[in-house]
Image: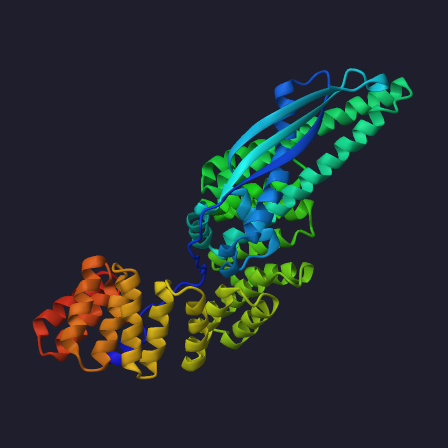
Length: 467
């Protein structure tokens, strides 16, 4: 009975992030960037300078990314190039405009002004450890969203910069009144697009800071400006997802896909939302489509594997995790999830191997030690199991699950007194931990303390234990 009970103890969640950092000697790097904007006669200098500053900041972020990639701390923090740029965007500080040039255009372009803004910012390597831990704390899907929006925003800004350069050339070659009228109309469109870019940028900054309600409000404003552009709906859908308003999330992703049917990340995120709603068939369909559009989208393989895991199709899940690892050998979430699937197939040695891979990358992640301990316990390697639980508890002394699993292992090895102590500690940490009451009741029963056992069984049932 104890063995049957022990195997039912919850050991893990599906989505995690595992990366670690090493201390480095602080170094402050100053980065700069230039941005341009063509100001019409109807615009304010403040508006024009704000847009030029936006482009300049993007250049500075690129420089910051190069600096970050060159530091020794990043050697143990395996990020792809687009992840580094996204990470760098959150590290810029002391952003200042150090130079503004207002260059009146001449000849046929008289009346227009080219605004050139130079920004200066700093990146401090002393901030890396805190920032890397914060990045690590985000789940893989949130990080994917941030990377995707950063790439999309970069493309949007680059396209806008190209249009401004073209406009400057057109202004220099105005021939007729119709030419001037056409340029004025194009200026209106550029101005509107510039404001839209500002709103999208602001919305994602709020999302990065987990201000989902604030991001939602800004994305609403962006959609009002350009109701036929998918980016606003994609951003708002992601903000709704952060607020766990999944029906609204799906509605916005539907609109984003309608406007841009080849957006792999819109399908990917809608699939993830269907997963949260336990609509697994729809989730698989969307992950399939995301993979069709982008065969190297390893996150989609990982999450599709997680859906198959929920459906108890463990072999199929492992196949997807294998593919995710093949595309990105450093994607630890896939190793972790594959370990869970192997465990469910009772392939405990394979599960231990995958958990060990995760621990080698992040030796301070308590849940992985707990999970590996459970696998060792199933192999009746109780000493190794208890050693892993001890490591988990050493990392997080308030980790109630580890006390419970360690107690279960003590019980399996016949040490019921120690098992009672661990179950009691788990209950102290989490008074609503039904499984811990059930474990303690079983141990009291084994010790012949029937009255205490019955009281714990009753409490476990009251808290919803149905095992």
